[in-house]
Length: 624
Image 1 (cartoon, rainbow, N blue to C red):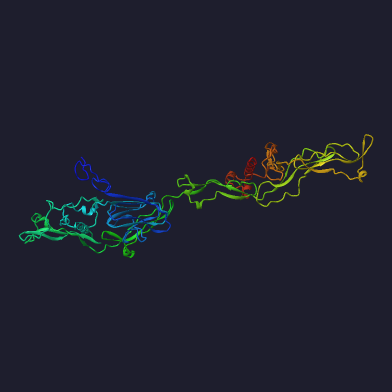
Image 2 (cartoon, rainbow, N blue to C red; image 1 turned 45 degrees about the vertical axis):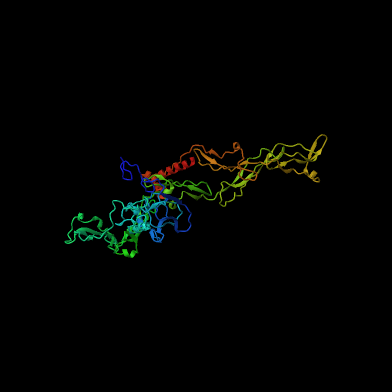
């Protein structure tokens, strides 16, 4: 069978949240909350007040940050992280209890700082946050006793009806019972024995219990033995204020010889009282904090730790001036660290060719971040400030201008006799560029060409024939008509010399015409020179779709687009053998492999090999 919290076998009683055996959780109150206020000023900001008598104290930062928690008493005494001095994690006494200060330092940890204490506190304490970055939230929780709870420090040392420090409690009929309780509490060491408040079991009985011993009485004169102090216990510390107690033994009153304690009255044995000892302070020492996180996730970084000069006194560790530790070598506060080798940038490809044949364009290359194991990783793994450029501008020189032409019009300007056909001629760059360009030159192609549809019939006087069709199907063109000097005869017309009609106003023989807007049409340059002189090369020209105002357009019929490339010089090549071009060395293939043919000496010494390579390269470029 199990033992309950009341130490009875088979009991099912358990301690409730208030620390009471068999309690119903009504003797105390849980206070909790989260401090989420947005703070703007750096420094100390009060978070919560912990009242006197609080137990199970838990102050926890909700996530890791560069802020710090601080604790001080209402009297202004700093307990943890006061006066802008950050204490190392550990146990600190304050408010009558022991606080455990935790500050996780693992790189992977996301937990924040915390204060934990069992309590109860014997004074009001204030919790602060040293604000340095946005507040992640501070969770606080503690338990306070109800109205019917007294200090566990008393009840841990006394049961109802038992004496306090050898003295009986005052009867209920007196008015000094509470005064005795509080006065007796002052005589205790202040160390918490229980971790929770416990319910007051009721007033002490007004009658004396049967097993109550009488008050301390003076020894009777006929006793042969009594209690005698023979020394003191060993001091609890060697320095910094410890404690010791007197040791009483039973001795013969006459011979002062120690005898068994059974010879003395146990009720008269003095109660040992604590005495201070070794009051001189302990030597100062360097208190070494934990290393901070490495300043860099890879490569050589720095880490720091806090070094404080401290001294022990009265079971407390105090921070003192650093000169007190000058007799000791001060540990290093900074150190280099390296978590892993950094990844590095690698250029994986050469620069590509320029994006334009002339003018200013761009070229690119492949740049990757590679780990120390040779794997391609995210760019963030490498130092972005050292990343080689993967794109740059390239200047291919000024772009030339070319004449762009349309095809000749299908119609002759005259239905009979001499007329003309027309085409459009425009000077434009053969590639878009922002550089200043040279002109197309003075060799402007002709915009008209003669045409003749046969002789025309005559007419009387100035005879004006009908206007011919417009020289263009769209856009601006010209119309022609025949104007001749004729003489009418019987049923016929005789053509006369123009001077015969010179005294008459001659009708115009040509006028402009405009049928409709052309919209967009194809224009092209002249054919380029053939890329090869034999074995099939190609020649190219640039074709553009332009609107009426000679701006780029996308409305031309793709099926009517003139060819931009055509084959040329398809005849076989006749090799030319130069008797003076020979290899002078047997290992000219090494010269070719080492790409030394660009130097005059090797080009002459290995003429045949270097020439073959040059021909192959030119052929390869031609096929491209």
